[in-house]
Amino acid sequence: MKTRTTLSSLTSRKQTIAQHFANANDYDQHASIQRQVCQTLLNSIADTKQNSILEVGAGTGQLTRLIAVQIDSPQWIINELCAKQALTLQAILPTATIRIGDAETMDLGESHSLIISANAIQWFDNPLSFVAQSAQRLQSGGQLLFSTFTPDNFLQINALTGQGLNYPDVSEWQSTLVEVGFEGITLSIQRFDLPFISPYAVLKHMKLTGVSTNQTQILPDSTPPFRWTKSRLQQFESDYWQQFSGQNDEGEPCVYLTYEVLIVSAFKP
Image (cartoon, rainbow, N blue to C red; front, top):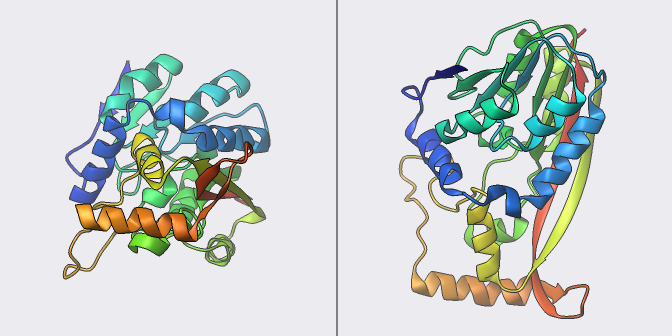
């Protein structure tokens, strides 16, 4: 087994994120949107024959399973923040090197022909830095392919609680890719409005997919962390029904949660 574990360098925020995903034991059962995004990424890979693949933030291996079957490469490096996933990822690709740790700060090699990441970069302290890091890690002609989310992702949660990640917008990604020197840049957005029977069901869904409204933002030192209280939860539920309700396909009352996904593909000249 080629697993290297480097957990000592994790910040408290990254440790919290890793713990949330470690506790999301039923992630794959509830992460239907993430699964669709992985399929889109697979279909966007320019060449089915690669010479070195780096996957960043592999999670439970949703994308790993797809590319392991469809893409040929003599070398694979699979990175994941949560140590709990190491054995799962190694089982999917026994020949891969599994690197557990923070992709923002650890050495993940160079001269890759493909760097790919599904639904992970938004957890970086500085998501835009992934572009320059990837340029250094790619060989000439290599493809950078990843999904992340736009500022309208989970817009209902942000509107009602003020909580959420700081997602760069499409123009920021575009300008950063150009500044770093990437070519053949394509950016596309996919929006999904998922219906739920109640605001509480929305929060449960988020927890089951590793997302928490507590302690995962980068906040000024003077900003107190968000905490749910009984009264805050009651107000949240009332406001959610008032502002973000509708009817599902069966004509039943529901509330909506928005996923807005950004797919990015670019090539190093």
